[in-house]
Image: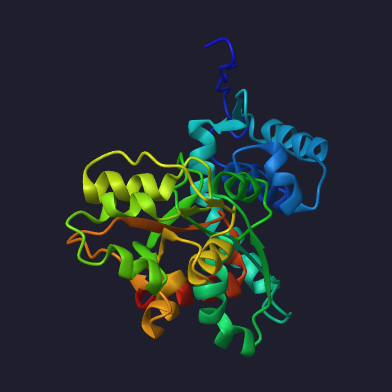
Length: 312
């Protein structure tokens, strides 16, 4: 445990577990931001402060309370028991003050992020009524891990991800289950129609995928056909929209999210090659940055997405 510096709890300057008589609200806001972000560096952008300033303010609050608030770790900080108690006491009042302070002003934009295809097909269309009602969005796209790191740094309020974030710092809720389907254009579908084993019949059909290691296709073969997929892709393109376009144009077959290709399936431009009793599912999670719901529009977007996801 050489990377970890144990904190030493000192007697409270007030002789009990309370705050100094005139605790500085700015110091408490900084403390709460660090507590929620898990590091001084991650808390700084949301406070519009430099990391050294955040560090100095935490030290000042530690001096005022007579308590150590955080244990320094190799990456970030861990709150001490006293800090957890303090956060429980000040979070609700500080959040209420933030909302009250913004009540007469235009709410800040909601910073939302997620997979590009899902944002285009489901998320942004779902949020159109809120935008028409005055909600402002700032939307980013990316992969799960980078988006989680950016959220910890304060860049996003809400993130939709295919992976539940690790640890307890970021709260998440299941949003929807995304079904994956095996599809091809009609000419290729006709070639494998009636085959005793679809997986074997597809060996002669070009494969389209978004990654060279075939993560979605390999999972489909493992869970549906019960065996490992051994094949090389004919087309690899790191974008599911592009993969869909290739398959729709007759380049071959692929496994894609049903939500992405629903329109093509309904119109007959794509054909479902297999209908397993239990298709592979991928759970989407909605993650919220701690303290983000001080902005009322973050709450509106969050609640609207949770309602709308039932129709995805």
